[in-house]
Length: 259
Ligand code: THG
Image (cartoon, rainbow, N blue to C red; front, side, top):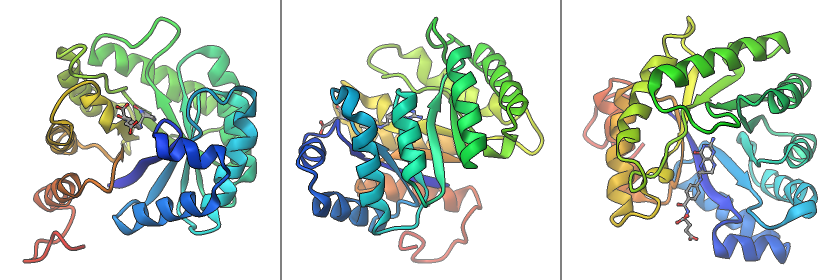
């Protein structure tokens, strides 16, 4: 399971403040803490409201984090210029987070993925929004896979994301995302990797940690290969390790929670 930490995100107030103050130590310490907790990649997001300063801010964020780790960096922004600034600054392996199925976006981001040798997350949504069921998400994923290949991006560089929506907003979507994870694995042989932004599920809900870890176990059972999550949530990480053990992806032993 690829564990991508969600916590270096300007959306969090303390991180936003550290970004604005260019506080390298605060960002480095946060990265090291998340790695210590088990992250094996880091999502970097400058957060909303930084406008035209976002590319410079992303460059600084990438430079700051890669000064303490060689782990893959998941460059997270809706802006093409911000994504490109992050890719150009990175010496570490990268994951572009993300392209949608919008033609204009794919036309810019797949060539960038090819140029930088980067992996790329493909979100199954377009200008009309998120498809309502697993079949339509599967069709959209197929369109993205073929478009990627036309631009020289191979299936092994793609990670498909069905887009998790808050359970408080639409309860039927949680199950449809699980079905999408199963469906995505049937689109190619060998199966293309899958990812979710796990904490989206509990946005606006109470008991967030319990919802997050229960959903993670279900998604892992459906074959999920990566998740953007909070590795500092110990209950969540214990659920993750237990799921890996039960799915026979990790050897059972008495202290299986330790590794
Ligand atoms: N797919 C992909 N990338 C993504 C997402 C996705 N990146 C962003 C997001 N979703 C994943 N990251 C987060 C980060 C924070 C939260 C949820 C998902 C979160 N934050 C608190 C909130 O909004 O209530 C903020 C709490 C605070 O301010 O301290 O829930 O789906 N590819």
